[in-house]
Length: 454
Image (cartoon, rainbow, N blue to C red):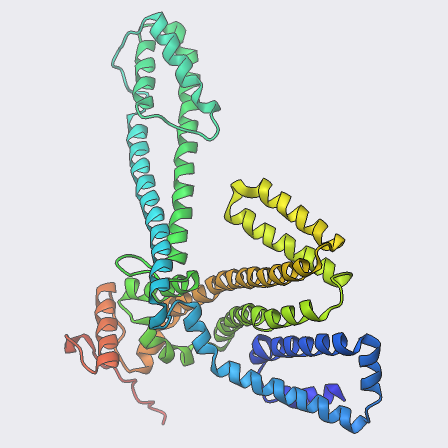
């Protein structure tokens, strides 16, 4: 019975709507209904009450419930664009101060990454100078060092390869050159200095690789998580990820992704288009769950807190779980407060199971459950942001691989150089968005030749 009704309802929805909206609505609405019913009537009472109803009434109730879920699914589907815009930081004017503050935090984080990248670039350049200054086999300039100076310098340089993490102080190459030149007048030092030179060469290579790896990490974060200056940041991490992806075709090809995406999307190969849609489904599902947790959970929490006769059994263990979630969030936000947070969490656990000062315990449970719901909602949003990375990377790939299909469909001549391509895309974006272009000669039509067989 349930399966047949469900099949009729879901037949009007595609797979992605089922996964991202229908089933979350079914689970949350149905779950709230079951919890309320079993709390009021008890588990045995709820089962007996359902079993005592005629089959016709059961069918009508199930069908009505599924129709309600389907209706809410369509409503939420129409609100999906609004949800995306809110999560991406396009907030109303009354939230302008909050948007400005959050944007400032993201701008500061991007600034730190840019400053670190510039410092790593300077470090790369310094290490390149050091490598160029290393002594070469044909360096025949003699030099002299006293035994004391030679021993001290050798000891200092010999200690460098043992460092972890590896470092390379400025002037190390010049010091090694001095040792090598002193060998010209002291053959007894050849073996020691040769071995040291080989070790330092390998050590310098390790330092260079470490700097390159760290710079690659920083540049990857800047590429994926933030739009490039002078583009401004959004108030949310998800908004910055999407803005960075939108900026990609613009900085590479002078192509307006917002204007041209709806025109390119129908031209994508079916298999690739499916991967794009599947990636978006993952984002939508996580955002739906992130919104539903506080939307359904907070009212149900406070209803249960004042409805249950005692906080015990499953309710007590749910409280312990909420304490653990809140403690985890506080420790992540303020690591130095971990001992204090751990002590407070232990006290709350004892308080939950002893149950002294009962009115305070109810308020404590309500606040803990509410806080835990918002923490879990935020974690789901963070996961949705990471899922957005996979989605936006597919958007970048779509423009990189299939932008030519759009020019072909618009009967525009394919450019032969990068400069010509940028000129063509810039003119096309201006024409579609504003109805004109600053350079009409940038667009050249090229119609397909007629089929001679036809």
